[in-house]
Image (tube, rainbow, N blue to C red; front, side):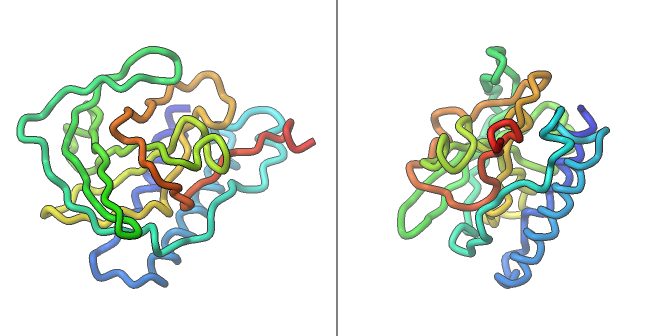
Length: 206
């Protein structure tokens, strides 16, 4: 299952676009990433699905691509790298480094999200891990929140595309996973109707 987590992580890396990317290009990249993610879920050595969820899998469910959730954010890097212990779904805590804070606007409202790196990612210095919650959780999206993986920008500005938001592996009923939970600082008081929706188990569809 470590292979599945790594594959999903790499697939979602396509979620950062150059500042001049056009909406139609962004939508095309989102759809391509979603197809690849679905394909990985169909491979027995990569999927987090089990039992009937795997055998009856027809694809994950997503919101329609929404350009309103592609935002320009300012990344304020943490002056001194801080160790941050993120709680997990199994009750333990996992060590991350707080890399910085992303600030952005949606519909004229200002928001911020803490961005982290795991110990392994900190050594490579390429991507940021952004776990978040929003007001769709528990209804349209997974109750414990979702993730974004964002490439570290060369400067202070970065594109954050919530259309690439994806569920942690724990969202699919597989108890062997332990997933980091978004901290309270990353609870957005807005509905982020973009990205992956809540997974509907095959048992629940009967």
